[in-house]
Amino acid sequence: MENKKLSNLDIEQEYNQYVEQKIPKPAYLKNILWAFSVGGSICVLGQLLINFFKSMGFHQEDASTAAVIVLVFMGAFFTGIGVYDELGKRAGAGSIVPITGFANSIVSSAMEYKREGFVLGVAAKMFSIAGPVLVYGFGTSVLVGLIYFFLFR
Amino acid sequence: MAVKKNGAQTVQFDNPPILLASGSVVGPKEGEGPLRDYFDIVLSDDLYGEKSWELAESKMLRESVKKAVEKANLSIENIEYMFSGDLLNQLMSASFAARDLAIPFFGLYGACSTLTESLSLGAMLIDGGYADYIVAATSSHFSSAERQFRFPLEQGTQRAPTSQWTVTGAGAAILGAYGDGPKITHVTTGKVIDFGIKDPNNMGAAMAPAAVDTILTHFQDTGLGPEDYDLIVTGDLASIGKEIAEEMMLDKGYNIAKVYNDCGLMVYDTKTQNTYAGGSGCGCSAVVFCGYIHQEMIKKNLNRILLVSTGALMSPTSSQQGESIPSIAHAVAISND
Figure (cartoon, one colour):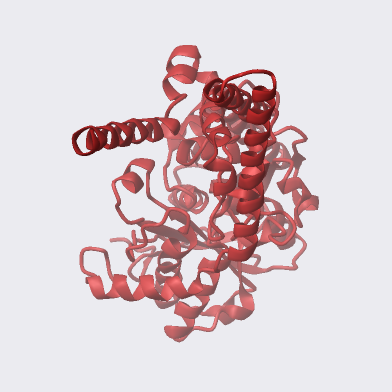
């Protein structure tokens, strides 16, 4: 065995391939089923909320906005009482991708860094995980908007 | 001339330092594990009455030192040096504990290898005649390590099956120039080894070559082999790393399987406790050694052991910059003879 300096890339490559065989495969089927059921349920809940608000006399757009507000609140609430991470452990992307997961990433960061104070802790760290999503989300929407503007208008 | 040096990286003691006593403090999850009966203090609340995880970790470290000192029938004033470290930025747990204990302090960072790093240096100090009593102590806390290295606790992410669970625990061992107890006979200091593993969720695989390098060097330097030990135990390679270490040792001509185990697999029941590949953290080898192994040595169920704590020397910055994980392992041989 040699130091990093002396070792060549072959050893590293060989070792990485050797390690690759040792890594247990995730339980794909179980994970997919969990993600599908949980993610699907959250979406169904969203649709039910939209239907409910529409039945209350909201327009389609307002009903969607109201549903989103309720879902974000629920994501934050279940994060606060320590349930959402238990769900996320099993559902993976099923609970990260919906808007409830977005709320979870913001609230969990805010909770974690409360001890460092409300300015440098909560406020500064709140978007440490959600921040990249916002940056690239906004970025992508601007890009798509420009494409739409120049090609289809 | 370095008359006590034995081979390339090993020191053999003329006046072997004696392991007088040790103390261990663990969190609730560790207190439900297979080694629960061996720990001195099991916390019911992992915040330990403190305002933050970091302070809770520091308190565990402090209490483990106090417990060890008490079990050795000494007082804090008798301890001349404290060798200690942890995983937090600027060694917050160790420095704060050393402040409260007021023992002359050497702060060490060897990631999860800190226990054997501090035992090594402390043993050399005693054999050299520079101190009669020292304490080697280290700690880790699941919640403080998560926020240092990974995601907020309440964030709903899925863990990789290769990931490891940071042990909430602290262990302290008192070494003395006089007294009764198991003796530290050899220390083999490891080199930093890097085989190019970049995945911080697979630290066992990153650290296994370092453990193998140190164990191999120990055998070559001393002429000892697996048959000379009742137990060769690595710090926190967990399931994947342990398998790799065993195979690599066999490849080099040493079959260690019969006497080999890993603290990361001993501290939890990985099947029922959801700890993925196994335990990790400075506290992992600290509580297994200061709890289980030391007591089994006192009972003479184990008589000659080689403790090899393993450390992954990456930082959040180095991981984000895409660098591989340099690793280290230090071996300490302890004998009842």
